[in-house]
Image (cartoon, rainbow, N blue to C red; front, side):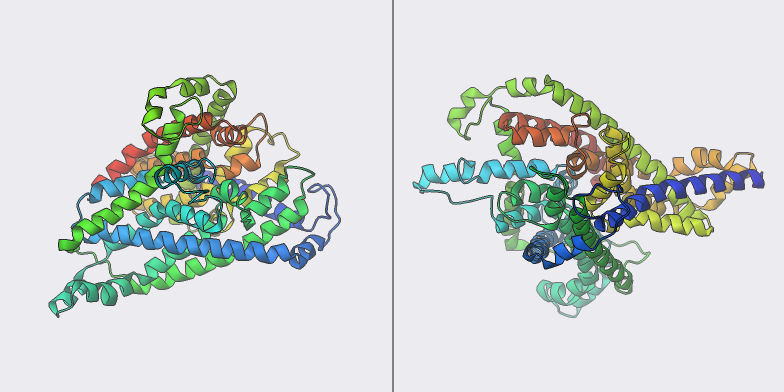
Amino acid sequence: MPSRRLNQERVVLLLLCAVIGVLVLGPVIVLIRTSFTPPESMPLETIALTLENFVTLLVSSNTVRLVLNTVIYALSSMAIGVSIATFVAWCTERTDMPGSFVIRVFMFCWMAVPALVVGFGWILLLNPGQGALNVLFRELFDVKGYVFTVYSFWTLVLITAFAVVPTAYVMIAGLLRNMDPQLEQASRVLGGGPVVTAFRITMPLLTPGLLSVAIYMFMAVVQTFDLPVIIGLTANVPVLSTRVYLLSAPVNGMPNYGLSAAFGVVLLVLAVGLMWVYLYVTRTGERFRVVTGKAFRPRRIALGRWKVPVMLAVAAYFLIMSLPIVMLLWISLHTGYEKPGVAGLENLTFATFARIVENPVVIRAVINTIVMVIASATFVMLLASLIGWFTVRSNRKLGKVLDILSFLPMAIPPIVLVLAVLLLYIRTPLYGTVWILVLSHTTIYLAFGTRTMSSALIQIHKELGDAAMLSGASWLKSLRLVTFPLVWPQILNGWVWVFAHCARDLTVPLMLMTTSNIVVATALWNLWEFPDLPGTAALSVLLMGTLLLVAAPFQIYAAYKNR
């Protein structure tokens, strides 16, 4: 029986190393190799090597602008978004503000709303020509021209900042919820008021955690693609992610894969540097941890006369977040573009929804999306569960290698990883199918799945699996019948998270789009470019509704458990 167990473990471990090596290392190696390919050459069609792509990148004045745009855009969006998230998290976790449970659920559910959809809504609101808010100001105040424009650098920054708030909120709320309040209570006993305690006790304790959240969100914005491509390109605000896309999929002319790969390598180096800083900060932050094993409940601050202003400030954020969604819903209920108003109520109809659900292209996109999200989520959690076991239970060196390989995608921007996948598989039967999308999403979200399962499995004592094997069960059977059922809630939560993020993602489907592997995200893109505004709005509403139906029950349950 021990020999049988070792054989099963060894075979599975070797297979996992091979699969993860192909998923992670293969694309990166091809990306680096392509960056040294002569211009106008296809990937892997020549053995010639050249530094011309990097020379072009370094001597171009546009490169400096790209890097500066990317850094300023990411820093500004992160600073605004994390500040808002910190304020809202402090209100819900440390004050007596009413409605904390509803806010938590809203924040969790909002992470299922695609950034692409939010961007469309903001364009319909702030377009200089017929944007709803500009039309409203013209009619009410007889304003000439426009008051707002969505096509500017700082508008892009603000929209991105609002988009990162929910994720930052979830991370910061956890910090506040788990922080032992004894030091704060001691400050109050010694005469420190709420303001003194907040700035001299709470904030210093939170600083390492907030810094790690800030670095993580900065990395996320550097790597973001959806909003920069639909708003930034028209606003003439290029960033590194959109530059990689335009070089590999130009509107006119042949793709320049060599230069695109060179930009991808630069973005990869930047991301790896940020990842190192993030890991360093989170590691040194252990010294500031003040969570104890004792049961505690942080004392909530009575807002008193500040309760109404604070509630209004939080409500203002929710109103701003809801505006683009309301705008999309309004447009989806009309057969053509119609400005919001009482007069438009007479023309409300579900005709656009009927037209969209009967569209053959949309039907094919829905089928492809269902296959893509189910397969991606299943493959990610299957691989992550096995890798998590070897990481936590196995003393083999290959298990540690597997853990490192599975974490590498965290340091690879999705746009770069997808470019690498494109270069690796462009001449294979996988290219142009929905399965190349599945392969890309599996690689991108593997790090999340592995971290989720490693954290869950470390809480399960190894004696439970060993007892099953002593009773005659094989290693695989003990995993299937004993170990994995014990962590089933974490597997399900991870599966839902990957499901929602695959469905809302535009980077992978757009970079790898062909006529045969179109999914809902690329169908939305095509409808917007056509343009078919009511159709885009209707499909956006359907996508949001579906994702919320899948994600909301889990988020409500999680928020209820954390009350």
